[in-house]
Image (cartoon, rainbow, N blue to C red):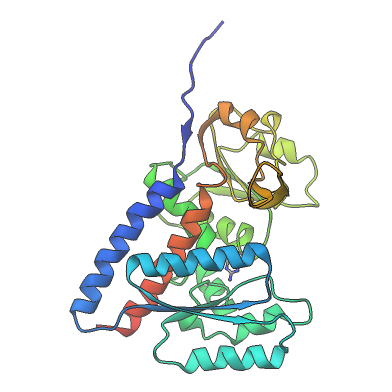
Length: 299
Ligand code: GUN
């Protein structure tokens, strides 16, 4: 019988994001020392969805930490699509703003595709505009959607090889699953993987995940990925952040990932926790994109 001890490593997204924030702060200081104004990110938030309020709050706070300016435009959820398109146009034309995001989801009466299409690609630091998605697909430099970018930064930080590896992405959203699959299959340092995108119509998902060297769980179903679906030594990246009622918490909820952590973690070589894994990396990646947008206009 073979015995071996696997040492599972917890991926510390909080620590990695803090280290990158320090680098960004240095870059901002150099940028402003050359006579440029500080990078400036704006965020549009429509309505009062608890998750969105929290996420946008984190983004604004992170801007302060690294010396960016930030502007939050918070509107009632009964605003019209026309009003929102007008606000987007104002930000497109405002030379004091380097980049901006429209926090999703938007209320149902507003066509999100139409709004995202209205964002000037040069200011689209979320990387959601079709021009930027197209550039990503072609492997050209562009703003990459923050969560997939954050995931590749984590893989890079921990020297996790992607080249030639089998990656299974569960979920095909425009924000995470789809761009992550493109990024990881592109010819790049954190790419060159053989990527399989799984989704709600995938048959025998377990057969796919059991082959995976790296699993990215991004479907938004708490504790979906169980121990029996993961091979020994796999790397598991958990993108889920579902709010689940929890009376032991002051807030009344706790955040649950898409991975049944207690079952999956012992089988992994690396795994991200929730919270403290991918979440902080999403925020810092948005800062990186905004710094890039500012540097594109500065000297
Ligand atoms: N909603 C969930 N994730 C995101 C994100 O990365 N950006 C925006 N704008 N909205 C989101």
